[in-house]
Image (cartoon, rainbow, N blue to C red; front, side, top):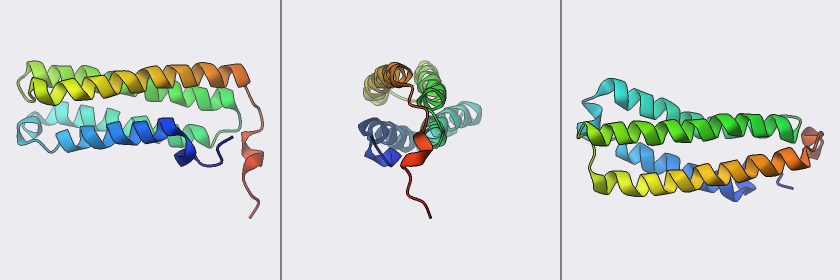
Amino acid sequence: MAKRLEELPIYDKAVGFWSAVNALLESPRLRKDRNLHEQISDANDSITSNMVEGFEQGTDRAFANFLIHSKGSVAEVLKRLKQAYFKKRISEEELKPLLERGQELGKMLGGFIKYLRGCDWTDRGSHRPSK
């Protein structure tokens, strides 16, 4: 069992996706649509934030619930990126790799949620060293 969230491969994938989206958010064309820019940024930040918060929960089921929010945030980012493309704020070349990465991350999150619900370990906090 992972003792730190950073030990989970899915977290690396999420951080990689987060970083790629953040790089795109620096585009002046996307910054022109302030509302869309903020919506993408907020949803993107929510992906890893929910993973971090969920990992600190006491049970696998509680962790899975936070991952559901992360998965929803991935879907929102993808939807907003498509909107940015249709508004001509980003190009197809910018959109396509992010869609692929985001869809892969969403599938991974779905599988991990299913796994955690199956395990349903109820003492996640006891693995941490006492201070």
